[in-house]
Length: 320
Image 1 (cartoon, helix red, strand yellow):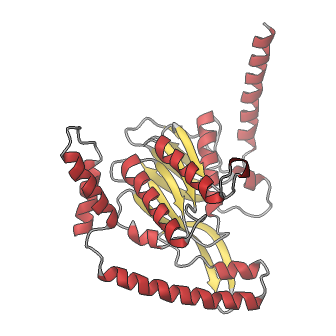
Image 2 (cartoon, one colour):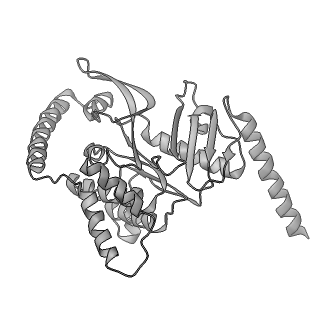
Image 3 (cartoon, rainbow, N blue to C red):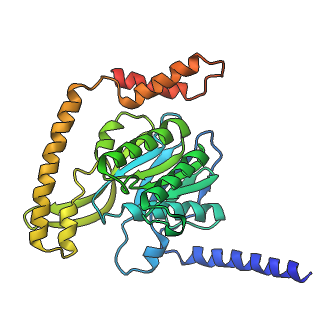
């Protein structure tokens, strides 16, 4: 009897806490609309981070986005932008909003519509695990493998700068393959932030991926960058790492040497891209991989899955 009493008191305390938290959100805040739809959807207008809003005196810039909702809508946002521009904050506030909504709590947004998520799977930050003898990159890949294996079309997946724990080319390849798997085969809702700008060009025609970036204003003469924290359609032209280094107080001589090295790397990368383009097929690498998979599938006795229509869309865009 006493255990039942404790359980009921804890339940009442939880409901009271959620109610008080909902009332203390600054305007605008709203009751989430949880809908039953054949296609997963996540749409929010003027979403804010509840913790940042309550613990800072500065004005928080809200953002809006829509993912999913129909067969033809993108389900994953490929996010680029400068360091410190607010990418990670956007990812975290999205996760918090979904959790609050499914708890029955109000959400710090003007409007939010979503289908119930069966899980939120995230890969944020970078750290090793010395007790398991795992490097930073090994931890990153282990968590990514778990996300790929366990995510469904009803999951929300958050990946923040996947591939940064290894070399540029290996990291880019892993980021490319993972994004392709999640968008083409898994069909989950998600955000994929990256500094690999070539990913945007590789997936610019993918029907399930939308390009977004966090805006910033840059004064090249004064080496000054002003973060706007606004989510906009498209891609960022640069990560502006040198500008952030100047803000952090790195000596000017070091930054100057870094700029020279960056320029050399940029030139070598451009030569690589030109050589790559001269041998490039009219069909993207991802579509070639999918075509091989479809050929293999057509020779087996297994039923063809519903992703066939998506493959046809991909091929038609590549061949146009």
